[in-house]
Length: 170
Length: 426
Image 1 (cartoon, chains in turn purple, red):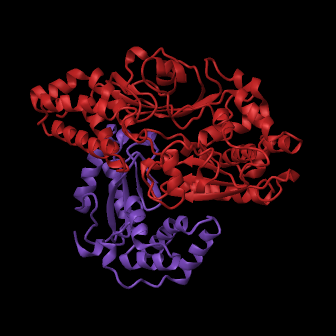
Image 2 (image 1 turned 90 degrees about the vertical axis):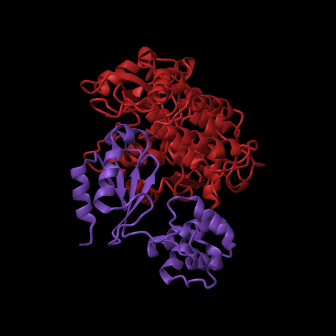
Image 3 (image 1 turned 45 degrees about the vertical axis):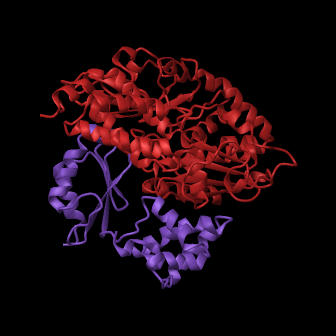
């Protein structure tokens, strides 16, 4: 395991931005307890930074007075908290049962061909990261996947080509 | 007469009804009934009399669940309502429709539920991936607040309610209600020991009810049109309507609101359009990934909680996954096992170690290396991971398609061992 993924190696917390702090403070009004805000803060930081670095995690830990180890335990439990850098667009690829029956393995193979990435990897141009996700709850239009906040349905190899060119920065 | 109380306002070709249009179609009627003097005890009695059962999967009677919440002067002042909108059961796509299609129905139902247990705070625990639901619900919550249906002293009743939107950071286990509470508290989502049950000690140790989206959406109808109307909706032993979905290789997969008690055949043939041309029905999971396989011979059984239980499966979420004769049953069960192994929270040993072992064996089958001994190990796990041996229902849920798959598709498993390949792959 590389050094970057171990939280305890960060010694200097990143100073949270004014925007991040304002959003974290807003969450404080919605939950009676700081620990609950910890998970929200991880999501807020990720929204602004793209992922949660060790320094960011330590920054949240200091700001909310939650032990870094506790926060790391939470951060690594939830699959939508990214503890490693991701590409500009995260593809959440549904490979659960209905999508599997409808042929999602071929779609995945096509993405792999096009972008030269497998699960957990980011394309060389930094545009896409591919991650599997549990059933996206749109099974009557399987196969489906998300790109960032957008859901794409009834996927075919042709549709994948269009989606990739639509989201590419080039 | 209203026959489709859950979907009467839903038309996915246009945006959902705003609060004015929702009210014009008899929405928020129940709040006015409450304002006219319906007490929390009266509402609880109505819900009990309706016979409503939880639509999240377990089918527990809603009124009974609520009746365990301590009430009266000596009960804790802070109580919570939590809506489980963490739809993640494989093959389940019904709550998305309700939230994206008619957000005010959920909000009205939440006000009813919170009023009944006198909870002044309610959280919607929503899947992070449901980005459209989030936008639609946030907008509707704002409208309801402006109208005075949320906030302080709702319609002069002295009852206060705030609804807070919580978007989850993932993991299937959060659908388990005590794991969900831990996630809301910002902890790792490991399930909690029961008792104490959430109704007594839930969110931050306060009395809490956790209900599924569809369950909550049943409440406005029950209060607005009455228990007799609700009972009149159905053909069978269970009451009310339910969302039923069909996915897999049928002609027109989809999700429909139908009365409970309809024969399965009608759902499959009249609504889902039957199997795609050239395919035969081999079997189906009646209510999501953690239910037992049913077979074509079961098509005349009715969509009732008890009727489906009689043949050893569960109605659960009511969303069916169809297995056709050109899809490998071993592969299908293997896909589910990969899911459950991945989604184990890791807290208890049988689940944490057992499911990856099962998953590993399926990879062997897929690679043409499955053995007789592997088959025996799979059979053993149906017992070892079964009900009563694990901390929560995740692993027992996984044994439902595993055990029934091994039984009903024995020849397919045997053929994988004998041929050392999957004969469905060309």
